[in-house]
Length: 248
Image: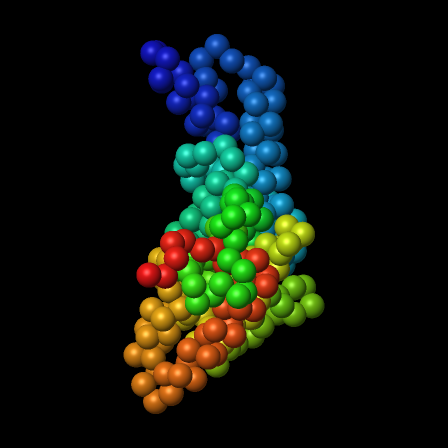
């Protein structure tokens, strides 16, 4: 066997101990390796999705993580990347895999909380001040993200299991506050559309206002711009807006 074959036999056994032992190894030695890898992955996944884990029995959760460990190929050893890989694993499963219909949305919400928590910061000079909203092309900070869900994911717990979808999608901005604590802000549909534009690309107040006016032709454009100015000023107070070049 060449080195790659030997390496693959180690990987196969560590992922699934029902496979044949690699040549020249003993079961007790390989079990040490498997326990080390599996326990690390189990800990990473459990810490990244605490609410989702709490909705399952210990044996059901262990079985789920074991399936992920055995059958999903991860491409990074980093904590946040393994959480993202687990999210991908869940998205690939059939509906019968899930105990609750909201599990994918809850998992995505918890994953995004982690992504926001570890996102890089930027120099203070890039921070947009409330009084600068009309003066610069604006973008969201790297530790803020706009999301929409059909279930009230922020409230789900062992004591609150939603039985039906909401009448309207729930819109959120998940962000880090000035103390680097992860927070969420519930948004109206119009506010979510405005922030989604800034999440996709840097844009000026006028650009975002004009884009929203096209979506809401029955609303006075002046009213839209005034409301947008108030919204962006409030978000700038939270420290989650950044400035690009000055408006020409």
